[in-house]
Picture (cartoon, rainbow, N blue to C red):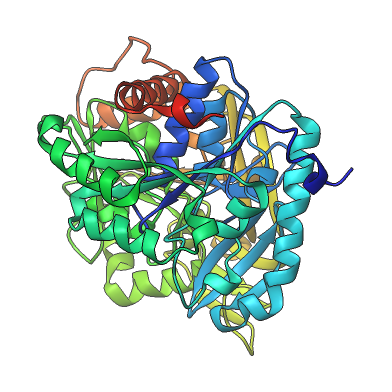
Length: 508
């Protein structure tokens, strides 16, 4: 039986739409998933199409947006790429990699996307929905929209907002961000641009990120309800959340709450940064202050620096050279600095990067450039991408079990010409990472494992290595495991939403 024939039998899906990008849809879905789980329901997150380089790899090796993985954790289930059947990963110059059901199937320009990918995109969305309901027949889908649902130049080819809402006849919530100002115009304008049958799907409105006394908005609430005939089901106060932003540009707006840090970490803000959720465990360390480095500067004030993942490693390495940051990183290393590169960051720390199949954005010819040169490694970008979960064991800075995942085209190996720089493997699986101890002090390390800092023993031991270099006392007390901290953060988020949100009013 086709899904269309079973829609009357399934639990009413809830869809969270926004008056704009950044209105708070992702966190709202995360909170609702945990609230419903606590009520004994079986919530399943879903976002038909997401555009993000902040990715996750499921247990079958499928890529999906990290925000849907986080929502799955909030639902108490394992993430699966079916929860995000279309992932677009921007590569710059209006080109994106297209991922369907976790697998890379090509690239597209923005201009040609809907011409070439609209019909197969809608088919893969329906296929994912059918598969989810087959696996979880008693579930309630909690669906996240994308951007605004009423972009009039795009609405006829919309894949992820009102088309999904109408297909599933979902009960929709419209979320708006009062912090941005113009909240009344945002709500009224969005509803006015909807067709009558679309507007009927909106069952509630949420005012998000309200600062101050909530009672001060009572008159505003009454006006909205009178004007729209739709109840305001929640006024959510401003929350100091520690979740990663969906857009890498928002990283620069994140302000650390740490006032007296013992350790300062500098993370290079690459133009094509990816997988910035890798640093959430460091954000949750009470003694660590994180700062983002955007331009060439003296790096001496940092106790260690991180070169993160990149969607376009060669392009970002050129940025490092042109900006002078490569030279500053080399100088920092000579001055007993500690450096970690993750995935693309590992590749950049090597001696050469070669792109014979034009996987890094060059259209007409293969490309070979120099890396930062702090590790004797050479990387060749292959045709096929490697995506998989990792279970390994570390050898440095301690022996411990390691979990994480890989997403990369590049294959990295020791550069025999540069082998005079002695390096050792970080893991028992030798190709997963290397490190080198500088003669005068400090280390250079690189790994392909995303999520490396989620491994508590490894993270604690690395931080202790840094503390020792600063003559700080080693921390012997075991810190709270990061995954327990993440659960605590999700619970706090859900509890705050639950205080101010009447979700039960739209369940039926």
